[in-house]
Image (cartoon, rainbow over all chains, first blue to last red; front, side, top):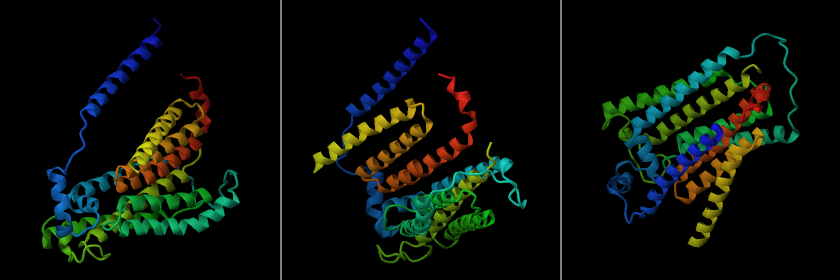
Length: 240
Length: 89
């Protein structure tokens, strides 16, 4: 038997084994009649304890706030590594009259469309993270939407330069404030990242749920600036 | 109503598997990238059907939006090396 056939046979066997695992999972599947113990706790206590209409936000920002801090840190480290790796090949931007390669001209549709759409996309991103405690979405989603607006700008004008200093300042200040609010919760409320630092207010209003809107807005700014800095570094890298 | 949702979900699942196969098998890289973006887009619709709008938003913004364009960025950078990869397989 040829080696390639043995390889294919092994791959098929492995696929069949994985499929068998999933079939047994599917065969034993029974939809839950009611929420399990943890889910019921969250569903019953979120509205009165945390004051968010969106239970997912209460879990992400307050009940599991430390995990979110970890996620933001992971994202920060990956953005830093991307910047570090790509900094090697960055174009000498400060040299006046440096030769630029001729590029494919951007179409009229893209350039006009990006002027119209970019402010709307940025506004949608801000809406998503400011309303994170009321409607689905939040800091991570809003930050990603803001970064896609930046991506549209970059597509319309590949030579555009974002101010890396501004992005860095926004990113570090929001990160510092996020941790600072967490420490303040340790001192003045129930614990690290406790949202009851500010009054909980009425369920469903914009200024409610304590510091959750504040924290989620900071996360949104931080995630948005991290993604934007990655995209900007990518587009500024010298073409190989 | 429920059977309508079920039928739609079935169609979406089949399309998703088809798009995933195209993403793996197709030799034209831009087509493969677009197909993998389609997989993420359908996944986000399925998350919405499963009543997880938060996950659906993340999947739509990052999975089908940013990742697809990131692949295109990288593809534009590695265009010169395409000949090397053509001999394999």
